[in-house]
Image (tube, rainbow, N blue to C red):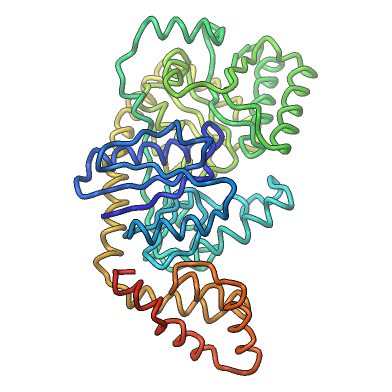
Length: 447
């Protein structure tokens, strides 16, 4: 099985759990699947973070001075790929081979206020179209599957939910010299709670800070928190960081809050191992990988009761209302009770066994295998049903992408649009393209 993996837009360290998902899935696929060849399509900026493996993993770096879609169509044809896999939520280009997309969540449909108008417009267009076009959709929780069905009207059997796992660095044996290095490097306090998250508004740092003020002013309790996360994010995230800093300064929390900045993956487990608890007040998650990381680190969890988090946590966390600082404060007190801590640690160890990259890989390849064994008739019928809802240029463009595996040339596109405008039925245009010598050549090779 030859699989093309579209990673051109991956920017290391910028997309949190989605990047861990991609890297671990690729690593386990190469290790576990003997009949698998993976071709990683990369940008010059991320190619050094992946390594080739003879016969199983090959890197293809796109040219930044040429049209991306044309390059990808070229390689799909030349390599005679069996599956086109887009694990970063957007399908591009639309290819005439079975296509699978991973959509971790559609947060913008639930919390549009957290996105700029431009980003919201982009997500509304490209995620919805990608979900409609893909032959199968992978997602990371039953919650995300449910929202995809409800928001996009997708059939249940096209969406496959499978949980992720913590990175393999959480399985490594602790190294005391590394532990001392991490504690010194980030100047970790003796006692602290950990919140590992980028500074996006839905991560809800402000309500966690409000809970700390409640504990200090009402209960005379001082709780220190360590915040990880890259500060070099979008303009919206930078504005949010300024809000956080202003709140800390205005309420005298400076001595309780420690910022680490971006933390390399191999150092992350030591932040967990030295912490007293994980606090996770996020308003929205498609999965919530830090919960699994905490379970595998024997770290008690207090977390939001929103979105996918109760599904992932099971009985291994104290849940709170993320909109209520007083509820958050109460759980931060409760998690420090010795008997409660021990109960959460034990239940977390049991729950951790439910997450494995072996299982994630197995389910993913079952989806790939089912697409290849199911033939192309039903896939073509479904794609045609979608394409017939389009008009004009969009209708013709999708026909070219589906049946010729390329973008239309301007002349051919205009000729077909003119035929439609003159009254030619859509079915005639479809049959003309499907029966062309170019299309027959593609499908004779399994496309």
